[in-house]
Image 1 (cartoon, rainbow, N blue to C red):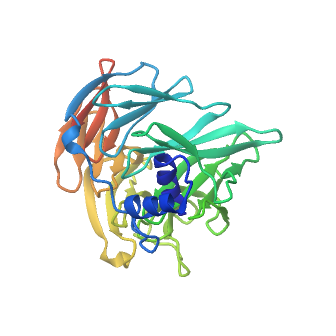
Image 2: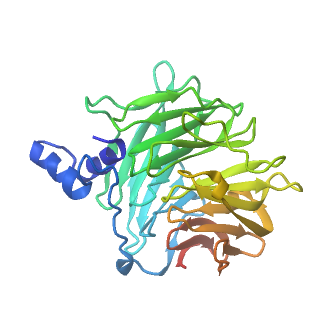
Image 3: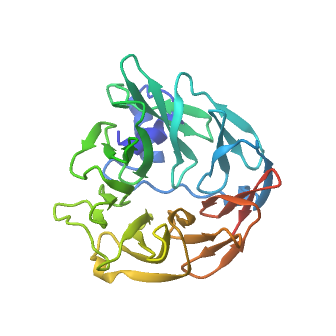
Length: 351
């Protein structure tokens, strides 16, 4: 069973007890084994309110919204809550003896990935779960022999900084960083088996993944190049004498990079993008009218790219120029809209 398929199928069917049920899962929900492209779940826009205001604790952190805005999540005092935006039903997710180290919504499903750090007898380790918001089921990742997929850590100072995953290639990459900004990247393959990536070095920043192929994309902090994993990978120098940061990768394998401003190394003043499966000589460029910090740029799975101008409280689509005003503090951008905190409420507003 392929890795992401396992996340989805285990959250749909708790126990696979016969070949007939396995056949049903593979063919009805996921498609045939030969077809690596999982059909995207249709968005239920007709059932989702366009604009909602919801209560949220003042101390809530790590606020996120699912791909279609049907659910949102937050962490308060170490506890994870997932709320259905229409009904406002709040579900607290049990963490047991661990603590949440990283969490992320799947890019095209209402499924939440949770990485928990646990203190073992000899050393800490990471374990992984998927949570199906529609079914209300949490399932731990394990291989075909029911061996739990865990990452042993050298010390408690190691934490997950980035996760890149594809529901088409059924692969996940995990970037772990210690307290000295040294990174380790792990690949969890189609059989939920763990592999340490020794060929990417340790001084890297953000990671991404192609959607159509199992190829890691990452930012090299030493040579300031963008790498797309292949036998011929030598790194991509986009512009001589200028540094670029990886911003994200969309479902069409478009890689988005940001040129670091000469005036302020924390800001991005140009976005360059191209198809990862083609030569980067066909790349396109978008100059930002006003440079913004790297973390103020949002690359969505559907190919939309936004820049957040916090001082103006405006989110701008850098592709078509459309602007969306908001109030308070912007917390999330999803395929259909934005979420922000204003007057103690979480407001979810459609584009």
